[in-house]
Length: 411
Image (cartoon, rainbow, N blue to C red; front, side):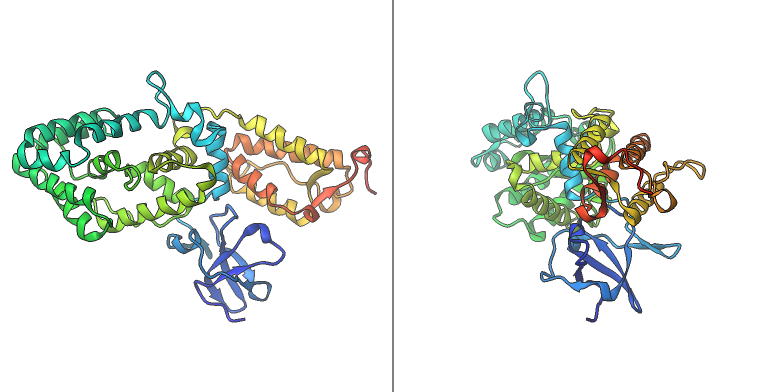
Protein backbone atom coordinates (compact mmCIF):
# COMPACT_ATOMS: atom_id res chain seq x y z
CA UNK A 1 0.00 0.00 0.00
CA UNK A 2 1.36 3.40 -0.99
CA UNK A 3 1.07 6.01 1.73
CA UNK A 4 0.95 9.71 1.11
CA UNK A 5 0.89 12.75 3.34
CA UNK A 6 -2.70 13.20 4.45
CA UNK A 7 -3.65 9.52 4.28
CA UNK A 8 -5.58 8.29 7.32
CA UNK A 9 -4.33 4.97 8.66
CA UNK A 10 -4.95 2.47 11.44
CA UNK A 11 -2.60 0.17 13.32
CA UNK A 12 -4.14 -3.26 13.84
CA UNK A 13 -2.35 -3.90 17.13
CA UNK A 14 -3.22 -0.42 18.49
CA UNK A 15 -6.95 0.07 17.99
CA UNK A 16 -7.01 2.25 21.11
CA UNK A 17 -5.00 4.88 19.20
CA UNK A 18 -7.89 5.41 16.80
CA UNK A 19 -7.12 6.54 13.27
CA UNK A 20 -3.93 8.42 12.52
CA UNK A 21 -2.92 10.96 9.92
CA UNK A 22 0.29 10.54 7.91
CA UNK A 23 2.18 13.84 8.07
CA UNK A 24 5.43 12.70 6.44
CA UNK A 25 6.70 9.69 4.50
CA UNK A 26 10.39 8.84 4.41
CA UNK A 27 11.13 5.57 2.59
CA UNK A 28 9.60 2.72 4.54
CA UNK A 29 8.77 4.93 7.50
CA UNK A 30 5.78 7.17 8.06
CA UNK A 31 5.28 9.89 10.64
CA UNK A 32 1.78 9.63 12.06
CA UNK A 33 -0.34 11.73 14.45
CA UNK A 34 -2.81 9.42 16.20
CA UNK A 35 -6.17 10.92 17.09
CA UNK A 36 -6.65 9.21 20.46
CA UNK A 37 -3.04 9.27 21.62
CA UNK A 38 -2.04 12.32 23.70
CA UNK A 39 1.34 12.90 22.15
CA UNK A 40 2.74 16.11 20.70
CA UNK A 41 5.22 14.16 18.61
CA UNK A 42 4.26 12.35 15.41
CA UNK A 43 5.11 8.70 15.89
CA UNK A 44 7.54 7.07 13.50
CA UNK A 45 5.97 3.90 12.11
CA UNK A 46 7.08 1.23 9.66
CA UNK A 47 4.75 1.64 6.71
CA UNK A 48 4.13 -2.11 6.43
CA UNK A 49 2.57 -2.06 9.92
CA UNK A 50 -0.12 0.39 8.81
CA UNK A 51 -3.39 -0.09 7.01
CA UNK A 52 -5.44 2.48 5.17
CA UNK A 53 -8.36 3.57 7.35
CA UNK A 54 -11.77 2.64 5.96
CA UNK A 55 -12.94 6.22 6.49
CA UNK A 56 -10.63 8.85 5.04
CA UNK A 57 -12.30 11.72 6.85
CA UNK A 58 -11.97 12.59 10.53
CA UNK A 59 -13.06 15.92 12.00
CA UNK A 60 -10.16 16.10 14.45
CA UNK A 61 -7.37 14.88 12.18
CA UNK A 62 -8.64 16.96 9.26
CA UNK A 63 -8.14 20.13 11.31
CA UNK A 64 -4.68 19.59 12.79
CA UNK A 65 -2.37 22.63 12.75
CA UNK A 66 0.87 22.43 10.73
CA UNK A 67 3.60 20.46 12.47
CA UNK A 68 7.10 21.84 13.02
CA UNK A 69 10.33 19.90 12.66
CA UNK A 70 12.77 20.01 15.56
CA UNK A 71 15.80 17.80 16.15
CA UNK A 72 14.57 15.32 13.57
CA UNK A 73 11.11 15.08 15.15
CA UNK A 74 7.80 16.34 13.82
CA UNK A 75 5.89 18.15 16.55
CA UNK A 76 2.52 19.79 16.95
CA UNK A 77 2.85 23.45 18.02
CA UNK A 78 1.74 22.60 21.58
CA UNK A 79 1.12 19.53 23.71
CA UNK A 80 -2.23 18.03 22.75
CA UNK A 81 -4.90 16.37 24.87
CA UNK A 82 -7.44 13.91 23.52
CA UNK A 83 -11.18 14.50 23.49
CA UNK A 84 -11.56 11.92 26.26
CA UNK A 85 -9.01 13.73 28.42
CA UNK A 86 -10.83 17.02 27.85
CA UNK A 87 -14.16 15.49 28.87
CA UNK A 88 -12.59 13.85 31.93
CA UNK A 89 -11.18 17.21 33.03
CA UNK A 90 -14.52 18.93 32.50
CA UNK A 91 -16.42 16.26 34.43
CA UNK A 92 -13.82 16.45 37.19
CA UNK A 93 -15.08 19.98 37.87
CA UNK A 94 -18.72 19.34 36.99
CA UNK A 95 -19.62 15.64 37.52
CA UNK A 96 -23.15 16.18 36.16
CA UNK A 97 -21.79 17.86 33.05
CA UNK A 98 -23.70 20.77 31.59
CA UNK A 99 -26.55 20.14 34.01
CA UNK A 100 -24.39 20.24 37.12
CA UNK A 101 -25.72 22.90 39.50
CA UNK A 102 -22.21 24.26 39.90
CA UNK A 103 -21.97 24.72 36.15
CA UNK A 104 -25.39 26.31 35.79
CA UNK A 105 -24.92 28.67 38.73
CA UNK A 106 -27.44 31.13 40.17
CA UNK A 107 -27.69 34.76 41.25
CA UNK A 108 -25.34 34.15 44.20
CA UNK A 109 -22.91 31.73 42.56
CA UNK A 110 -22.49 32.59 38.91
CA UNK A 111 -21.20 29.25 37.65
CA UNK A 112 -20.43 29.14 33.95
CA UNK A 113 -23.92 29.59 32.52
CA UNK A 114 -26.24 31.69 34.66
CA UNK A 115 -24.86 35.17 33.99
CA UNK A 116 -24.43 34.57 30.25
CA UNK A 117 -28.00 33.33 29.93
CA UNK A 118 -29.18 36.35 31.91
CA UNK A 119 -27.47 38.65 29.40
CA UNK A 120 -28.97 36.72 26.48
CA UNK A 121 -32.44 36.93 28.01
CA UNK A 122 -31.99 40.66 28.48
CA UNK A 123 -31.07 40.99 24.81
CA UNK A 124 -34.05 38.90 23.72
CA UNK A 125 -36.47 40.91 25.87
CA UNK A 126 -35.20 44.34 24.87
CA UNK A 127 -33.66 43.95 21.40
CA UNK A 128 -35.11 40.75 19.99
CA UNK A 129 -38.07 40.24 17.68
CA UNK A 130 -37.21 43.07 15.31
CA UNK A 131 -36.66 45.60 18.10
CA UNK A 132 -32.95 45.95 17.20
CA UNK A 133 -33.70 47.18 13.67
CA UNK A 134 -36.58 49.34 14.90
CA UNK A 135 -34.28 51.23 17.26
CA UNK A 136 -31.56 51.35 14.63
CA UNK A 137 -33.94 53.18 12.29
CA UNK A 138 -35.69 55.41 14.83
CA UNK A 139 -33.73 55.78 18.08
CA UNK A 140 -29.99 55.15 17.82
CA UNK A 141 -29.30 56.53 21.30
CA UNK A 142 -31.64 53.98 22.90
CA UNK A 143 -30.06 51.18 20.88
CA UNK A 144 -26.60 52.16 22.10
CA UNK A 145 -27.92 52.27 25.65
CA UNK A 146 -29.56 48.82 25.45
CA UNK A 147 -26.45 47.23 23.92
CA UNK A 148 -24.33 48.73 26.68
CA UNK A 149 -26.69 47.36 29.34
CA UNK A 150 -26.65 43.91 27.78
CA UNK A 151 -22.84 43.78 27.60
CA UNK A 152 -22.66 45.11 31.16
CA UNK A 153 -24.47 42.05 32.50
CA UNK A 154 -21.41 39.87 31.89
CA UNK A 155 -17.77 40.26 32.87
CA UNK A 156 -16.50 39.00 29.52
CA UNK A 157 -14.89 42.31 28.52
CA UNK A 158 -12.04 43.78 30.51
CA UNK A 159 -13.04 47.08 32.09
CA UNK A 160 -10.72 48.98 29.74
CA UNK A 161 -12.24 47.21 26.72
CA UNK A 162 -15.76 47.98 27.92
CA UNK A 163 -14.88 51.64 28.52
CA UNK A 164 -13.24 52.01 25.09
CA UNK A 165 -16.21 50.32 23.39
CA UNK A 166 -18.69 52.55 25.23
CA UNK A 167 -16.70 55.62 24.26
CA UNK A 168 -16.51 54.55 20.61
CA UNK A 169 -20.29 54.18 20.40
CA UNK A 170 -20.70 57.87 21.26
CA UNK A 171 -19.77 58.55 17.65
CA UNK A 172 -23.16 58.28 15.94
CA UNK A 173 -21.72 57.56 12.51
CA UNK A 174 -19.47 54.77 13.75
CA UNK A 175 -22.22 53.30 15.95
CA UNK A 176 -24.72 53.27 13.06
CA UNK A 177 -22.21 51.66 10.68
CA UNK A 178 -21.47 48.98 13.28
CA UNK A 179 -25.11 48.23 14.07
CA UNK A 180 -26.18 48.08 10.42
CA UNK A 181 -23.66 45.33 9.74
CA UNK A 182 -24.44 43.64 13.06
CA UNK A 183 -28.15 43.55 12.18
CA UNK A 184 -27.24 41.82 8.91
CA UNK A 185 -25.30 39.13 10.80
CA UNK A 186 -28.14 38.51 13.23
CA UNK A 187 -30.78 38.38 10.49
CA UNK A 188 -28.93 36.21 7.96
CA UNK A 189 -29.82 32.55 7.55
CA UNK A 190 -26.23 31.58 6.69
CA UNK A 191 -23.22 32.91 8.56
CA UNK A 192 -20.84 33.69 5.71
CA UNK A 193 -17.93 35.92 4.82
CA UNK A 194 -20.29 38.18 2.85
CA UNK A 195 -22.08 39.28 6.03
CA UNK A 196 -19.36 38.81 8.66
CA UNK A 197 -16.47 40.63 6.94
CA UNK A 198 -18.30 44.02 6.72
CA UNK A 199 -19.15 43.76 10.43
CA UNK A 200 -15.54 43.10 11.38
CA UNK A 201 -14.47 46.03 9.19
CA UNK A 202 -16.94 48.24 11.06
CA UNK A 203 -15.53 47.05 14.40
CA UNK A 204 -12.00 47.83 13.24
CA UNK A 205 -13.14 51.29 12.10
CA UNK A 206 -14.54 52.31 15.48
CA UNK A 207 -12.80 55.38 16.97
CA UNK A 208 -10.26 54.33 19.57
CA UNK A 209 -9.47 57.48 21.51
CA UNK A 210 -9.64 55.75 24.92
CA UNK A 211 -8.01 52.49 23.91
CA UNK A 212 -8.02 49.73 21.29
CA UNK A 213 -11.49 48.67 20.14
CA UNK A 214 -10.60 46.53 17.12
CA UNK A 215 -10.43 43.42 19.29
CA UNK A 216 -11.91 39.95 19.13
CA UNK A 217 -13.68 40.33 22.46
CA UNK A 218 -15.48 43.48 21.31
CA UNK A 219 -16.29 41.99 17.91
CA UNK A 220 -17.83 38.76 19.20
CA UNK A 221 -19.53 39.71 22.47
CA UNK A 222 -22.82 41.00 21.03
CA UNK A 223 -23.42 38.24 18.44
CA UNK A 224 -22.66 35.66 21.15
CA UNK A 225 -25.07 37.15 23.69
CA UNK A 226 -27.74 37.80 21.06
CA UNK A 227 -27.62 34.36 19.42
CA UNK A 228 -25.69 31.84 21.55
CA UNK A 229 -27.06 29.01 19.43
CA UNK A 230 -25.13 30.32 16.41
CA UNK A 231 -22.24 32.54 17.49
CA UNK A 232 -19.11 32.11 19.58
CA UNK A 233 -17.22 34.48 21.85
CA UNK A 234 -13.51 34.70 21.12
CA UNK A 235 -11.21 35.71 23.95
CA UNK A 236 -7.76 35.39 22.34
CA UNK A 237 -5.61 33.74 25.00
CA UNK A 238 -8.35 31.40 26.21
CA UNK A 239 -9.44 30.42 22.70
CA UNK A 240 -5.90 29.95 21.41
CA UNK A 241 -5.08 27.75 24.38
CA UNK A 242 -8.17 25.62 23.76
CA UNK A 243 -7.32 25.22 20.07
CA UNK A 244 -3.69 24.37 20.89
CA UNK A 245 -4.71 21.88 23.58
CA UNK A 246 -7.12 20.09 21.25
CA UNK A 247 -4.75 20.24 18.28
CA UNK A 248 -7.10 22.35 16.15
CA UNK A 249 -5.98 24.86 13.51
CA UNK A 250 -7.60 28.14 14.53
CA UNK A 251 -5.87 30.23 11.84
CA UNK A 252 -5.60 32.95 14.46
CA UNK A 253 -4.91 36.54 13.43
CA UNK A 254 -4.92 39.49 15.82
CA UNK A 255 -7.49 41.61 13.98
CA UNK A 256 -11.04 40.26 13.69
CA UNK A 257 -11.31 38.41 10.37
CA UNK A 258 -13.52 35.84 8.65
CA UNK A 259 -10.95 33.01 8.40
CA UNK A 260 -10.31 32.87 12.15
CA UNK A 261 -13.98 33.22 13.03
CA UNK A 262 -14.99 30.53 10.54
CA UNK A 263 -12.37 28.21 12.08
CA UNK A 264 -13.73 28.91 15.57
CA UNK A 265 -17.29 28.17 14.48
CA UNK A 266 -16.10 24.93 12.89
CA UNK A 267 -14.28 23.92 16.07
CA UNK A 268 -17.41 24.69 18.10
CA UNK A 269 -19.58 22.68 15.71
CA UNK A 270 -17.27 19.65 15.70
CA UNK A 271 -16.91 19.48 19.45
CA UNK A 272 -20.56 20.34 19.98
CA UNK A 273 -21.43 17.23 17.99
CA UNK A 274 -18.89 15.11 19.85
CA UNK A 275 -20.36 16.35 23.13
CA UNK A 276 -23.91 15.53 22.04
CA UNK A 277 -24.21 12.71 24.58
CA UNK A 278 -23.74 15.30 27.35
CA UNK A 279 -26.51 17.40 25.74
CA UNK A 280 -25.02 20.90 25.48
CA UNK A 281 -27.84 23.41 25.06
CA UNK A 282 -26.00 25.95 22.94
CA UNK A 283 -22.59 27.49 22.31
CA UNK A 284 -22.55 28.96 25.81
CA UNK A 285 -22.04 25.39 26.99
CA UNK A 286 -19.47 24.61 24.28
CA UNK A 287 -17.52 27.82 24.94
CA UNK A 288 -17.47 27.01 28.67
CA UNK A 289 -16.36 23.45 27.93
CA UNK A 290 -13.36 24.75 26.00
CA UNK A 291 -12.44 27.07 28.86
CA UNK A 292 -12.81 24.54 31.67
CA UNK A 293 -11.44 21.46 29.87
CA UNK A 294 -8.39 23.17 28.39
CA UNK A 295 -6.86 24.59 31.54
CA UNK A 296 -8.88 27.71 32.34
CA UNK A 297 -9.89 26.54 35.80
CA UNK A 298 -6.50 25.00 36.49
CA UNK A 299 -4.74 28.29 35.68
CA UNK A 300 -6.98 30.02 38.25
CA UNK A 301 -6.14 27.43 40.89
CA UNK A 302 -9.70 26.08 40.98
CA UNK A 303 -9.70 22.59 42.43
CA UNK A 304 -11.41 19.75 40.63
CA UNK A 305 -14.13 18.01 42.59
CA UNK A 306 -12.01 14.90 42.23
CA UNK A 307 -8.41 15.47 43.26
CA UNK A 308 -5.47 14.01 41.37
CA UNK A 309 -4.67 11.81 44.35
CA UNK A 310 -8.23 10.47 44.40
CA UNK A 311 -7.99 9.73 40.68
CA UNK A 312 -4.67 7.93 41.20
CA UNK A 313 -6.11 5.75 43.96
CA UNK A 314 -9.28 5.07 42.00
CA UNK A 315 -7.33 3.91 38.96
CA UNK A 316 -4.96 1.72 40.96
CA UNK A 317 -7.87 0.18 42.83
CA UNK A 318 -9.67 -0.58 39.59
CA UNK A 319 -6.75 -2.39 37.92
CA UNK A 320 -5.91 -4.25 41.14
CA UNK A 321 -9.48 -5.52 41.31
CA UNK A 322 -9.10 -6.75 37.72
CA UNK A 323 -5.86 -8.54 38.54
CA UNK A 324 -3.63 -6.12 36.62
CA UNK A 325 -0.54 -4.89 38.40
CA UNK A 326 1.45 -2.82 35.89
CA UNK A 327 2.11 -2.44 32.18
CA UNK A 328 4.14 -5.28 30.74
CA UNK A 329 7.65 -5.00 29.33
CA UNK A 330 7.89 -2.68 26.36
CA UNK A 331 4.67 -0.86 27.22
CA UNK A 332 5.98 -0.02 30.68
CA UNK A 333 9.12 1.32 29.07
CA UNK A 334 7.01 3.47 26.72
CA UNK A 335 4.94 4.70 29.65
CA UNK A 336 8.08 5.71 31.52
CA UNK A 337 9.32 7.48 28.38
CA UNK A 338 6.07 9.47 28.39
CA UNK A 339 6.75 10.52 31.99
CA UNK A 340 10.30 11.55 31.07
CA UNK A 341 8.87 14.28 28.84
CA UNK A 342 7.65 16.09 31.98
CA UNK A 343 10.99 16.17 33.80
CA UNK A 344 11.98 19.50 35.35
CA UNK A 345 15.67 18.83 34.74
CA UNK A 346 18.23 16.24 33.75
CA UNK A 347 18.44 14.80 37.26
CA UNK A 348 14.66 14.72 37.68
CA UNK A 349 13.64 11.20 36.72
CA UNK A 350 10.51 9.13 37.36
CA UNK A 351 10.86 5.82 39.25
CA UNK A 352 12.24 3.15 36.91
CA UNK A 353 9.91 0.38 35.70
CA UNK A 354 10.48 -3.18 36.92
CA UNK A 355 11.34 -4.70 33.56
CA UNK A 356 14.23 -6.64 32.02
CA UNK A 357 16.33 -7.93 34.94
CA UNK A 358 13.66 -6.78 37.40
CA UNK A 359 10.78 -8.40 35.52
CA UNK A 360 10.80 -11.35 37.96
CA UNK A 361 9.68 -9.10 40.80
CA UNK A 362 6.23 -9.86 42.22
CA UNK A 363 3.06 -8.28 40.90
CA UNK A 364 2.74 -6.56 44.26
CA UNK A 365 6.14 -4.89 43.80
CA UNK A 366 5.26 -3.90 40.25
CA UNK A 367 1.95 -2.44 41.35
CA UNK A 368 3.67 -0.41 44.04
CA UNK A 369 6.21 0.88 41.51
CA UNK A 370 3.42 1.96 39.16
CA UNK A 371 1.82 3.71 42.14
CA UNK A 372 5.09 5.58 42.74
CA UNK A 373 5.23 6.60 39.08
CA UNK A 374 1.71 8.01 39.21
CA UNK A 375 2.57 9.97 42.34
CA UNK A 376 5.54 11.38 40.44
CA UNK A 377 3.20 12.26 37.57
CA UNK A 378 0.97 14.23 39.95
CA UNK A 379 3.93 16.26 41.17
CA UNK A 380 4.98 17.00 37.58
CA UNK A 381 1.47 17.88 36.39
CA UNK A 382 1.20 15.07 33.84
CA UNK A 383 -1.31 12.74 35.50
CA UNK A 384 -3.89 13.29 32.73
CA UNK A 385 -1.47 12.09 30.06
CA UNK A 386 -0.28 9.20 32.26
CA UNK A 387 -3.78 7.88 32.95
CA UNK A 388 -4.82 8.32 29.33
CA UNK A 389 -1.89 6.15 28.22
CA UNK A 390 -2.65 3.43 30.77
CA UNK A 391 -6.39 3.40 30.17
CA UNK A 392 -5.85 2.69 26.48
CA UNK A 393 -3.61 -0.34 27.03
CA UNK A 394 -5.31 -3.59 26.03
CA UNK A 395 -5.36 -6.48 28.51
CA UNK A 396 -2.53 -8.34 26.82
CA UNK A 397 -0.14 -5.46 27.57
CA UNK A 398 -0.51 -5.77 31.35
CA UNK A 399 1.23 -7.90 33.94
CA UNK A 400 -1.60 -9.94 35.42
CA UNK A 401 -2.27 -12.64 37.96
CA UNK A 402 -4.72 -13.74 40.61
CA UNK A 403 -4.63 -11.42 43.61
CA UNK A 404 -3.65 -14.19 46.03
CA UNK A 405 -0.42 -14.77 44.06
CA UNK A 406 0.64 -11.15 43.84
CA UNK A 407 3.33 -11.45 46.50
CA UNK A 408 5.15 -14.24 44.64
CA UNK A 409 8.41 -13.41 42.90
CA UNK A 410 8.63 -15.02 39.45
CA UNK A 411 12.12 -16.47 39.23
